[in-house]
Image (cartoon, rainbow, N blue to C red):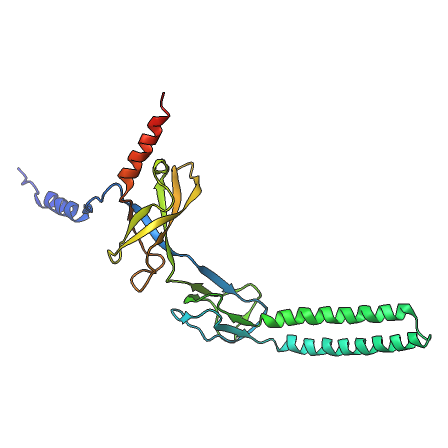
Length: 264
């Protein structure tokens, strides 16, 4: 008679204990997931196709509105401007000459019109080149932090190619995905609590916008809230957590009472 092999069942039991996940303690069902995002954020792209000569910003660096972020080599456009300005001066001289000839009855109205058209074309070309030159220096449209950099000094960039991502990390809002049935009591300016996962920090906020569309599959609605304090070191875009509404029961009861008025 063979002995029973107790090692294999014991080993399998041990593996089962190791592989069985430990369930986290359930949270309040009235708390739902939410995420912090920057209220003001943009990607600055190359405004012209040129070589990036000066790029004095780094990731994580704070910049102020109007601070220079990048400068491009626009020497070719500057040379073109000088050429067109010379052509404009020649057209102006020709126009003046044609007017003098006309006064002496030696010129025609057609020649004056052609000289005026040449002058106008030169002025338009000057305005176009000056508009390009104005783009050769990129400044920050608002105060914020460089959260991403996708270019390097002396790199040639095509027009529209991304350079940096600028984020105002001090002005945050909370994005929530809530059940559509909560629309029975949810309203604008309603207070809520937001608790971050990373720091367990609890913040007060209020509903700013209720996006006017319900997802037909999940029957949820997007809600945007704003915090009562400005974000600091402990609050950054991308942080997630839980959101709850302390006045939910009261608002739900008021909503129910209002519905009873219309019952026959």
